[in-house]
Image 1 (spheres, helix red, strand yellow):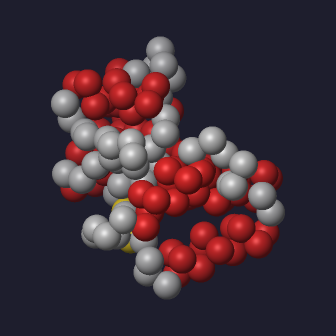
Image 2 (image 1 turned 120 degrees about the vertical axis):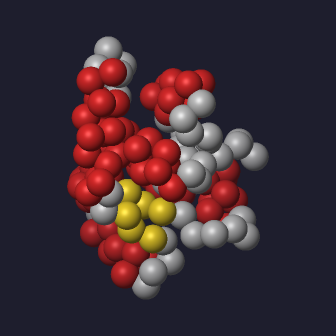
Length: 132
């Protein structure tokens, strides 16, 4: 499962996590899953911070099937529960979609947002991709 922070770090050479993000994306493993719930957030950040070329690069990778997309319609009850439970963080919709999808599929979450995702990981519902 991939979170917005991992993708942004991978495409931004000036990001402090850039080298780690690239290395993790290049590890031999199953492909990462991108929850559809983060796509608007991801596209908006890429468009406003980096521009059309980088957005096209990410969309092209998704179109070529380099990452899997999960629409997660069945996750809405869990997403709502997570947003309510962690309203004080606030967790928010995008992060809740990543957590719900990871819980359902059982894979680790690749994120640099340890504040939000660390809470769910401590509860034992998800695991995080370890730092390199």
